[in-house]
Image (cartoon, rainbow, N blue to C red):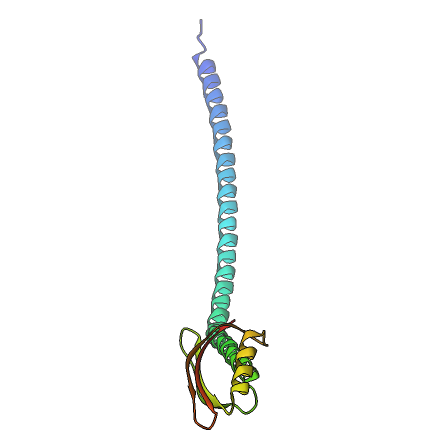
Length: 178
């Protein structure tokens, strides 16, 4: 009786070789798949890096443009501040012009002004003389009536002097409605 051990061994060796070949195929295909994944990841990384470089160059270009325009911006800010100050100056000038027009519209012809002062609080001190009591009376009437462009809110007679020749010297304080 012969035992065929070689047949069993050969069968096992063949089976083992088939398993090794299958394992080798799985390993090779796995390595190919992993290689493809790595290649795809590397390509995506290269694309992202390229986009980053393009964006960096755009950012640098925009920074240069902003720096070039910063001088213009500082000039604009300077001019805006000057225009604001000039606007305030014009409003002040218009107010002073309106005050002068109002005061001179109140004074009748023949009045001689000796002093005209506007204090910081807005009180107007007016000193002068008129040749007669009638003109002084007309001045007082004008103070009570509405005038343009501003109206008198309050008036005080600070001093009145009558001279021997009929002239009336006066000191008035006026406050205007602005």
